[in-house]
Length: 103
View 1 (cartoon, rainbow, N blue to C red):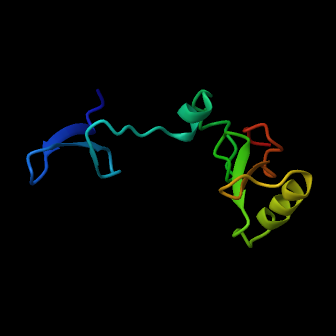
View 2: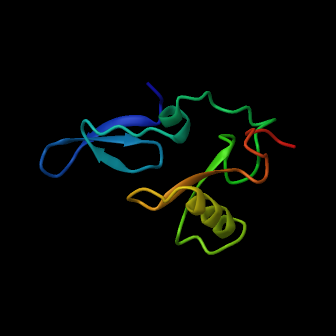
């Protein structure tokens, strides 16, 4: 168990889990990061892409993203296949061309 993880009781006597700086969560709720969710190893900070993908090679973009290159990448992905219910496309990172590594 990480030294940043600990439990405390809330005002009603329930146990809250505290994980790092992420705040208190009800018991039974777990947090996973993008690497655990995608089943990929954590990147090496010496070689990982310093762009928005943070070493994954892909970036989530939505219709609300108005800055370039995200808007153009979303439009191109939308033209190929409409986004699902949440309107998000996962596009190849333009900084590393999808490798997750520094150029």
